Length: 229
Ligand SMILES: Nc1ncnc2c1ncn2[C@@H]1O[C@H](COP(=O)(O)OP(=O)(O)O)[C@@H](O)[C@H]1O
Ligand SMILES: [Mg+2]
Image (spheres, rainbow, N blue to C red):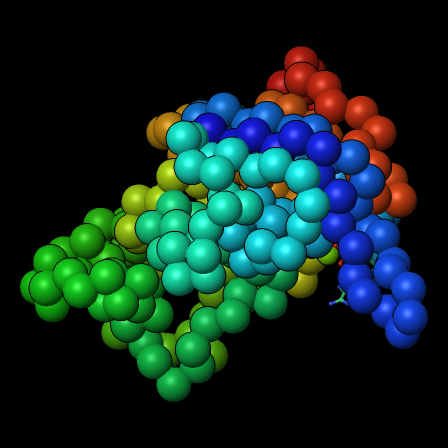
């Protein structure tokens, strides 16, 4: 599904360039659960922003299914993003003056889905993330873990091809982190492809494959065999 070959990424800085990713070769198949781990500043977010079609300014090749991502114009790149990826971030990024249901339904509203169908689908996804009967609650009245569940519901509501989660447990205590990781595991077992960035070894160990990044390079890329680490 995802196929990066010899991807390099630099930021322009003053006169010169500042290189952040070096010769990234990465393939992810449908159904995988990949953790990307590395120290702060190693290039993890830069990499998944490319994978999640947020950033098109890189060198090398990215082929998504049959689409050559680097050949797309801006509009088609954005379309691919809206159609194919769900995002989960460290700080949830919910809209605070909208209720839970409205937050979760937003991607469907943008996609032009009918109001009634949105309502039905949102309730179904809220059930899936353990937030039954939370449609009319306001985000500010929820715990951090519950807010992240809302964000995960929003990420999966439009049935994207894959989920990208950037430090999704970074703002949560360890018990809540465990619950959120359990939710990702359940979603993956139900067929959702997940790419999860973390610098937490405990979180990473719950994935099925671990890609380690150091100074913008893939340092190792291995299956995780010990399920209960
Ligand atoms: N928009 C940007 N402009 C310039 N440099 C950036 C930008 N975004 C990130 N960087 C730099 O790229 C490097 C990698 O950043 P990032 O991908 O965010 O790392 P990580 O997510 O692993 O902490 C860092 O040195 C960071 O300062
Ligand atoms: Mg980051």
